Length: 419
Image (tube, rainbow, N blue to C red; front, top):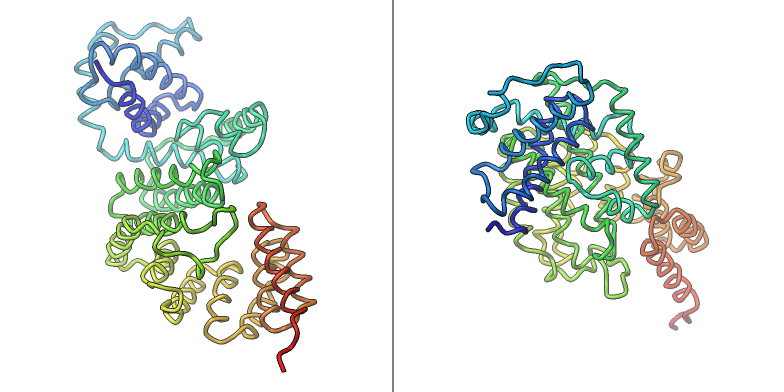
């Protein structure tokens, strides 16, 4: 008797590769999904009695392909059925699939599947929703709860995303090395979007909080099929380093705890050790890229036993390298925090003031600016910046953190001056 929990895990693990192969075969996302679901239903019915196949992924591809062919031909009755030997010779066909599961076609299947989900015509929220539905297999109900929308609204969002992808005519040919590199970059961005959607949650019971773990799982999957890609190593290392701090990022009242105030004994050391090993391996390739540099910055923090031990000079050098590689006002904003540590609040303020036009609608810009103005004793301007940050906060925790800064500033202003 096969354990149902094992079957669920096997189906979830096989989903990206099996669904990607079926997508290549049918070139239609809905048909591939239906074929995979039918294969899963058959697995649930037959595996408990007969035991699991020697390769669950190959079995699902084979059964899904045949059920998909059957469904397609039922819809097109003028087409002839396949030859009997093609339908019946299960063992030979499955063996052939097993032999080819690790070749480049199947690696490209998963890349193509993820690439479709993060098609540039789709808004970021639709990319995330589609990837969680198609690649990760989350239910529409789960995704809807995470995004705080109704199930019908999320169903419509995913349906529209599929329609847009189908209309775009995504190519199914094996990508060239240049196209593969471009796709890997786009897919990595989408995975990191999923991670951040979960990482921002204070409540670990919130549906979206699990997105971070799912993003890490997807990054592990990508690294498994592209084991020599240093930027994938960097992406996974970055997410592991960030998630290692999750137990210390919020206090018992779900209030934000800044990095410098966190209890570092709560950080997940196994995650940190794994990330540092991955980063060292990535850097040995001598192909620096944004995720590797961001991971290197996070690694400097992880190596410091306390906030006072942080090597801000090293972090500044890394941010400067990141700015050269990927110029961005957000990166400059982050470097301003380092400048404030090394050179003082005024230099940091001078660095970010020109960013006001581009980052005027960004919560962290106004939060940092308010903090710097507060350090300089410019309380009225700081209050104005803090008020703007509260208006732009994405969560109650962010808004509450800024309100505490305002309260502290007011308390300090009312304290009598020591004589």
